[in-house]
Length: 177
Image: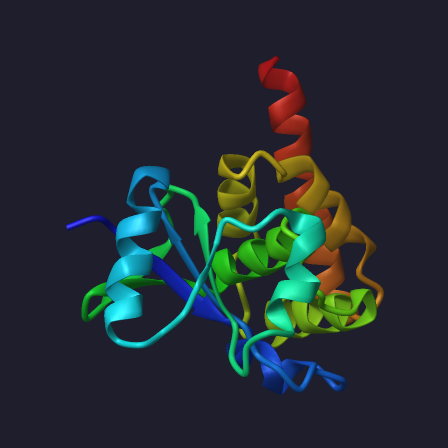
C-alpha cells in the first residue's frame, strides 16, 4: 500500500488566535500515486485538488467547504500510522505547515504562523533536533533554523534552547561541507 501522510490545519487551531474559518486537509503521497488517491477519494464523494500551483491554491481552496489538497511527497520520516494513513509527529507538523504556507501557497496569515509555531514548540515541548532533521529532508533546514531563532514569542528558556540547538545544527552542516 502506498503511504499517504495526512494532516489538517484544524490541529493547529487551538494555538492560533485568528485562525482562518476554513480548515484545509493535506494529503501527501508519492507523485505516481496522486491520481489513484484522488480516485479513491472521489468514490467516497470527497473531491480533492491534486498538486495545484502555489498561486492557484488560495482561489481553489475557496471552492470547497473543507478543502482537501493532494501534494506529491514521498517522505515518511517522523510519522505514525493511524489506521490506513500516516500522521505527522508534532515536530514534522511544524515543518509541514511552514512548508505548505511558504512553498505551496496555503493562505495562512504570517503572524498566525509565527504564533502557532512558537506555541507548538513551547507548549508541546517539541524536539528542535527532530524539527531541524526533518526540515533538512525537506531541503529547508537552514531556513527553518533561522525562522525558529527569529520567533519572538518563545519563552526565554525555550528561545535560548532553540538558539543553541539551531545554531549547533547549522554550524555542524557548515562544517560537513
